Image (cartoon, rainbow, N blue to C red):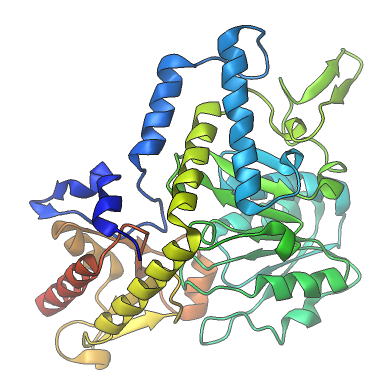
Length: 411
């Protein structure tokens, strides 16, 4: 059981007020708040250790390089990757997926080849493949979802063909909270000799991830969704693929030797890390991973699942409540009908509901959540999304429920 009041002291922002109400921060699916240990580590590095990594013989550069490479090892251990050579620092999940789409796509696809994605993907796992489609003429196949908000695993096997080059799938839906059976999906894809990329942006903050146990070929996640800083993310890739993929960008650090006639590229992972990296943010990410590791991912998962179940039970008592998806994985997407008429009444616009909840100090996300194709499948324009983290409490859920009911009665 988490010591919530002690944990909340680690996050100073949670003590502030918004519009004269205590802040209830339930937009963790978009970004999490940062503990003091992360902020202090980054501040200390800027104040005392700041120097460009890998490129200097002087003390500060050597110290900054050590901290940066220790952060890479922390990430490797956290997701149980075989080697730090397979851990590439990026700006986030979006850049990680774009890197694979650009470089794997360049090396291994041609016109008419196929990439499989799913009907619940974030735009970050749709648009990069469409860019590849425009560039090289690939075909994108989409595994549909059921009315219950789960992948139609009866259809998925029929999508593979001899021209399928990659399957890209979210681990956890950022809208529905659906936890996809990615281990089974990976086994199915590998039976067809197809590598798999997993978007782990919404899974890494909530559960233990072991990339070797999953046997995924690529895995992407963002630091800011797991209590780390913005602008830092990770791409894990199996060496067998990374060695054969061309660089993503050219410049300093990713080279071994440059002449005007030709350039030879650096070893992994530096081949994919052109230019000065955000080494301070990498340190912050490592400290965030240390923080959740000390608490225990199993403890975090149990707390968040219990809180999500409680929230869903309490919200279900509100007349006119519409849920989308049924997962307990720290995300609830919903809309509410106006007034006392219940389900027969029109829905309150998600933007109106979110705006009025904000005036009560309750921060939720509204809109299509960068998943417009999923919204079209659900037949709606958008939802309100409450997403939970390790520091959220039942009292905050009660405030959300009371706020929704108050707003509903206003309409």
